[in-house]
Length: 233
Image 1 (spheres, rainbow, N blue to C red):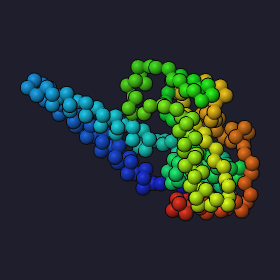
Image 2: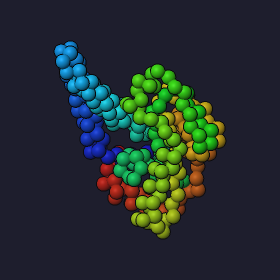
Image 3: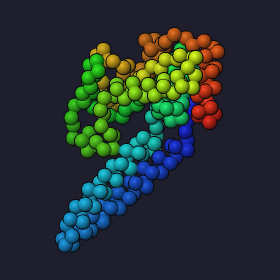
Image 4: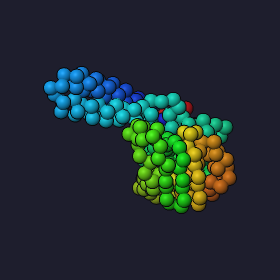
């Protein structure tokens, strides 16, 4: 399988996460020092809040862009073994992770939430826990991943319709929980909900779409590569 990744974006976001985390810790230290003086309590209070927000924002960016493996690397590993006709585009197209394959186009929306998560149709619920509450800002709210995945796929579809309307290519939205600590209970989901371990099997089975014509596949690859700058691994 081939991978095209926006390394410039990944590097800049990783740096942002690092610098913001350091700044947040610095502001927290200042807030604590001021609090000991007892004279400027309001400054200490503001510094503590600001420092916490900055630190959590930095942690969120580092979780997304700085950790190893990153979401795109998790997907790449999960799809290891597919041939070069499978091409993963990471942060180079209108949606974060897009797979071009002989059987169609897939948009992967990754989530790193942990714990018990229940999906029933288009309804999503996650069980509250103290550990999740402490990492709420770092992980981001779960929201409705099905709607998010649909929006991601629709952005790719809209872009394709503008650039190559003659192809009439469909884009399949998929939600992938990349943290192995996620405990999924899924019933008739509106959008496929998977873990990395089940992704390859799903693509070969239930998720297998109608095969793309060779000419359409080549046209899509050329279009995607042009948008991605031709960077491939």
